[in-house]
Length: 423
Image 1 (spheres, rainbow, N blue to C red):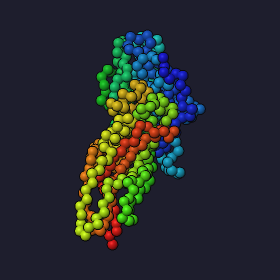
Image 2: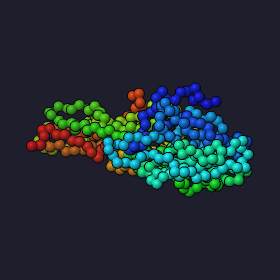
Image 3: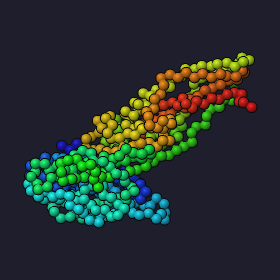
């Protein structure tokens, strides 16, 4: 039984991902094109994404979906669909993001397979400057319509690799061997997400191909909003200062549902109810120590500070999948275990370098359990030493928080305030 067959699709579609003049959205609605019933090969079939015209008008598939088995996949699978958008700036001289294929090149036909109906698989031949992102199935031996899919402008996508076999006709006794494979996006650059459209590639053998002309992934920039950092605290007298400031949100990243592991929602529920998540980075100055030297000579002060440890941020990453400073993907063990094996999007993501508070962007953030801070305070002066603490908070579309916050303190940039100030 389909666990989602009684669940409606989102009451309204998610806001489209905009990449220049390309709009990307997702559909869970499909039309079965062909299956291999009657054949001796393992069960398999091909489905055409069918974005609802009332909720996703003008959206097209990038290719068909290949599956193993004969079950109904509606509301159990999700794939990307695309639409032509407005140029990012008025009057911009920019080629269209999408184009019909010029033609189709036959990759396979099931002649001799024993299936109840005929099938053929075709590769869209893109115009110059565009690429195909998947293959197309035809129920019969005639070419598909050029309106069945769209090709994408080459600069809007990235080359992808071949991943795992989805289905093959092995055992069917068809005149041509054929196998279909999923696509794996490359490791994302800082500030980007690369994700597979959910289509397939196919070859006339059962051996994994090294490359394929239709193996491409979509790409998007991570939307980021920045605010000024808090003003460092300043002593105005000899009295002890307050222990810390309230945290200020200084960076907000907007992340799509498929890049988040939500411990309280299934991937299907995320798509329906929280298509986007907001990741806040908050900053605050936390007091480490305050020293008043009343003597007539310099005096050494020493404090031991216990800040949030690396475990805090690692727990946050384990619960949400989001990593700070390094790439994360749908292939992380903790991420893939939580997802439906079918209702997911293959992706690779990495926050921009400005989102990480440390300079070593290629390593995990490791915070000390306890840090000793030593300073010499001049005579008749008072000093306060602060550390900068970064807190990471993840919110759903409705504003509810996902998991507990993760925190990290930067001891490389301590802030020291003296009173009276030096003249």
